[in-house]
Structures are given as structure tokens and as C-alpha cells.
Length: 359
Image 1 (tube, rainbow, N blue to C red):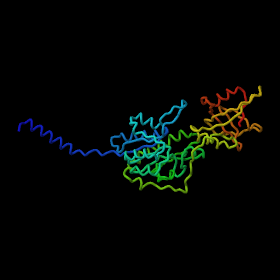
Image 2 (cartoon, one colour):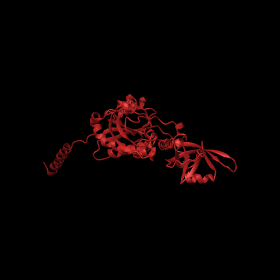
Image 3 (cartoon, one colour):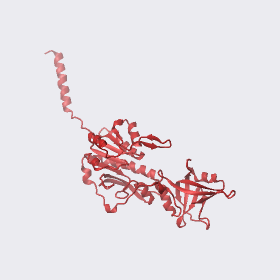
Image 4 (cartoon, rainbow, N blue to C red):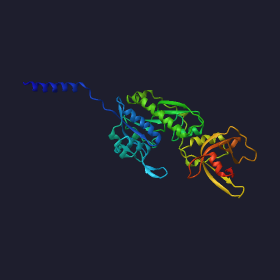
């Protein structure tokens, strides 16, 4: 046998030996993410980052989100923030699903074909039927921005702020058919200051919730999370129903702390509104205005003069609204319909000496 042939055989034999000695890389576990608004993007970003790590055991195999809708001032039909982010990250459009309902048979059939090991929800905004929940091998887990069983429902952050809580948090829990009632895998609590608004608190809680999720994913995939998850005490459950637009109106018969908490809770959407009357003593004209109340604080001084309880005054950069129980609310920022938000000083200067009466 010539030396060239022997050399080729030597190379082939050693290459085969090398290949056989390397264990095949394990297939990554398939994870499906469900979310829609901007706060959900924080969680999806964390999942993409974790899945791209060298030692990651999972991949984001698909996205489920709300259908495109009219948004922004132009009222253009746009995909959800989650869909937009997924497309920007290079996820193929055929792996981004937006069924009208999560129980649509065509959608469920496609989901079964993907064979997900786990589904993760974060403000998805759609009810998941039993047929859906039966598909992922390790179940579905949800990031819920409250300390379950407190504030189960569609508006946990808003209702917590409306009630003036001093502590809230975020929970990672298994999803069951009963609303937000699944066993809790992990949670983290936070102190709430009296100025934070719903959008900021939502952002904070979903950011921390994404960290909880990434930390707990190994235990969820190996099945140990189910044994350590703590069942909720239904007797301690409170509800956080969806906010209706007509809740946005402020009634100054209520005490100032009630109104201040409502302004914080409803910031973003639907916002809080009040009607006022602009009085011109010179001309005798009256003009009713609708104000969007953006930022407030509770007035520490309750000096409301007798006979002036219906009139709004201006003090040190704020509009002072007399409220129920001898309290007063300082309004620091307002917005007129179709205009940009302005501070109280700019609004007061625009009155040019006219009086302002609450309605």
C-alpha cells in the first residue's frame, strides 16, 4: 500500500473517532411567549437574551399576541408592541401569531405542531382555554404584577394604587382556568411611594418579574417548580376588575387622598378628568372646560376660606382644589383636549385674571 493511501486512511479513521467522541448537542426546549403591550416587551427581551446565552437550554419558538389595532394619534393599524419587537429581533413572521381568541382551532392546531415545552404569559390580554393549557409539556406560567392572591384580574397595579397600598409586588404563577388562581412559584415585594404612577410601577414590576422568570426557568423545565409552588389561599383573594372609561371623572366631594390615588392609578389610561368653570367678572361670560388631571399631590395646608370652597386658587406652582372633609388637592400638571400637557403655572397665567370654579 503506498504511503499516500495510508495517509488518507489514517486521516479518515481519526476524523471518525473524533466525531464519535463528541456527544451530540441536546435539542433546546421550545418556549412560546404570549404578551401584547409595551410592558410585555421587557419580558420578551429578557427571554431572547437568556436564550442566546451559550449554555441556554431553551429557545423562543414563537410569539402569540393581540391582533393589529388602531393606535397612536394617526390611528394607523399597527401590530402590537410585542409583535413589532419580535420582528425587529429577526423572528420570522410565520412564528408570530395573533388569533382573535386563543381557543381558535386553527391556532391551537398550529401550536400543537410547534410542540412547546412551556408557555409564558405577560399581559397577553386574552383568556386561555383548557385546550390551550393542555398543550405545553410543562404548563403555562404567568407574570402577574401583584402579590397573589391579592389583586387578581385585569388591572392589579391600577386597583392597588387606587386603594393607596404601601406595598405590592410581582408573582410568577402557574396558569389555571380560574382567574390568576394558580400555585405561586416565586414572588417579590416592593414598597410603594405616594407619588409613583401606574405606568412606572407596571414597568418596574414586569422588569423584576422577568428576572424571577429567568431565575426559575431551570426548575420549571426540570419539573421541580411544580412541587415547590405554593397553592394560593382563595379566602384571601381580592379582585382587580378592568377599568371602565367612565371611572375617569374626579368628584371633588371626595377627600384629597382618594383623588390623588386615583390620578396615580389611572395615569396613562384612561387618565383622570375634571370639569371646571372659567368666570370672567368683567364680561360676565362663563366657559366650561374639561381638564385632564396629570399630576397631583395632597395639600398639606387645609386653609380653605369660608365661602371659597367652590373656587380653585393658585399657590406656589399648583392649582388648589378644595375637596371633601376639609382637604385640598394640589394639581401640578393639566392638559386641555387636543393640547399638550402644561404645568399649573402656565395654565393659571393663561386665565389672565379670570376665576376658576370646580364643578
